[in-house]
Length: 440
Image (tube, rainbow, N blue to C red; front, side, top):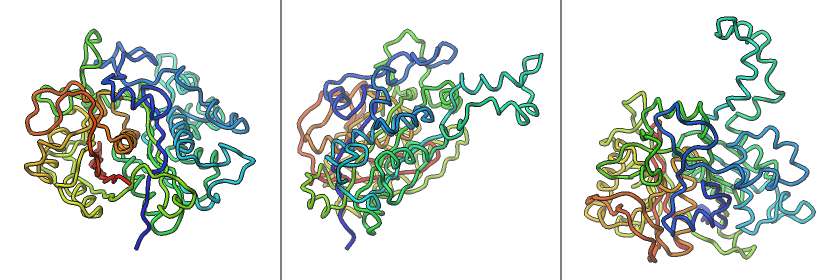
C-alpha cells in the first residue's frame, strides 16, 4: 500500500502579512485585506484595488539565514513570497533544517526532503526593465529592437534573468533549507498549489522522499501583470471611489469580476510513519488528490465552460481516492473568484457531484479576503482548509447575497464538525485540481 501523507506545518503570505495566524484572524473576524493599490499608481486602469501585502509587512532579509542574504538581490517578489511562506511552514512543523539551525542535525536527511512549488508568469519589474530599454530608444521615442538585441540588453543588471524564472521559487527554498530530494515547479495558474501538493504526495507515496515543502506563490501587483489580467477581462471594473472590500462577490448574481492579490502558501507534508517517529502531531491527512484538464473555448480569458465535465471529474476522482461519498464532505473551499463564468462552472460541478446536498455544504470563500493570488491562490486555500480542520471552525464569508443553489451567502465564523474538507480550483487555462483533506 502507498504511504499515507499528512500535513504537519502551514505557512502563508497574504495581504495580512506573514504566517497563517494573521490570515486566519482576518478570516474569522470577517475583515477583508482588499485596498487601493499603493505599489504603483492604478489610476490609468479601470481597476484600482487588490489584496496587497504592504512593503513593511516583512523584509526578506529577516526570513533567510545571514549567510544567504546576498542572494536576496536576485529574488523577485514572487520568490520572496515563497521563501517567506516556506520559512513559516518549516517552523510551524517544528522541523530543523539548515535554515533554522545550521549547527544542528536536521530532522530529515537532505536527500529525503523534497520541494514542489507552483509559480506563475513572472513579470519583470517595470523600472528595472525600462532603465535598460531606454538605452535603445530612437529619437522618435520608439525602441530600436536591433540595437536592443546587440547591446541594449547588456544594460540589464547582472543575473537579471535569474530573478524571473518560475523555477527559482523552489530553487531558493531548496537551497535555503538544504532540501536535496525531488524538486519540481508547476505553472498552471490558480490550480498550481493543488497540483504541487499532488506531486508531493506521489513523491512521498513512492518513497522518493519522506517530507516535502509544497504550495505556490505569485505576485501580480505589477503594472505588466495587472495589464494582462485586465486584457483578459477577469478584473472587476471599479471607480476608485467605492468600498474595495465589497467588490468580490463569489457566486452572486451581481458578481462582476475578481480582484488580484499577492501571496501564497506552503505546506509541510510528511509520510505518516516518519511524522509519528519524530513525534509530530498531524494537522490533517491528504486523503485524495486529483487533476483534470478542461476545454477553454474563450481564447482571451481562458475560462472553462459551465458545462465542461473536467472540474466535476476532478472532484469525483479525489473523493474516490479518499474513499468517501458526497455525504461525507463537511465543507468546500472552491476557487470562488467572483468571475461569473468561472463561478457558474464551479456551481455546476458542485451540483453535479453533490446533488441535493449542494445547497447545504458550507463553502469557504477566500478571494474576497485576499484577492486572487493566482499561482498562490489554491495553495492559500489549502492552508485555510487545513487550518479549518485544525480549529474545527468555519471562517466568515463576505459580500455574497441571494444565492439559493449553494451555501455561499455572507455569514459570521462558526464552530463546525469538520472531518473531510474538499479544496478545489479551476484555472485560467483549464487545469483543475481537487484535494480531500481529512481530520487526523
